[in-house]
Length: 287
Image (cartoon, rainbow, N blue to C red):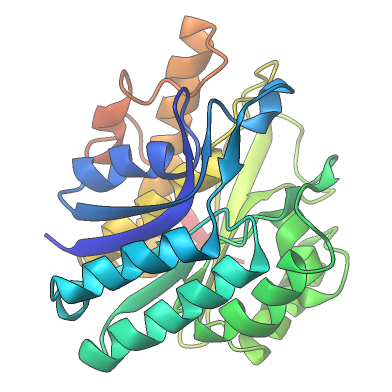
């Protein structure tokens, strides 16, 4: 069992951000300290929502409280998702440095939530993307961008496997150690398939291909679930390739359960056994 500090958004209803991450992390046997960057009624994918981004002072106070309890030396990993404000991002980096001063082995898993294919950026383009590219990426043991986010971070379009190889190499050169690219759909891949890539300088690049389910509308939160599941398996001692294959299998089960129930939200409670015992294994192969 590991202790994880998860810094993400929070919604009262639905499964995105910390609400989505808690289920796989708990299922995989980990304790989680939640630090919520926003408090919304529901995720903005619905169009209308209420709530607010928490201020720097509010989050700083919470961080100081955690430090005062002597928790920093016990934190095994930091997971970040939606930040919302670049000043909060800098606070997170300062907190990470303080944690690593007390526990140098603390892992940092960064989900650089910025946008998606077809939507473009849904964060402040002037501050959040540069924060991830210039600061957070360099500190990350594992970064989990989707195809759109990886394209931005690498400074190039990703349309095929050759592009992906170059882009992943650029991300490593910028400082990222392990990289998992989610929702990867190159031009050569059939429409009913989707894939994920994992890359590390010590092992090369691997791919796992799974069915692509057409859900309308597509539920939000899959990226949050992916990053949390990956981290949970890694902390349980799984190699990166195995963690990727297990994460992909869990996501298929979650999407199948969601589709069968005709839900707008990911059916995480119904499908929570997928995180420890997915119904099907998917082959991972070198790209």
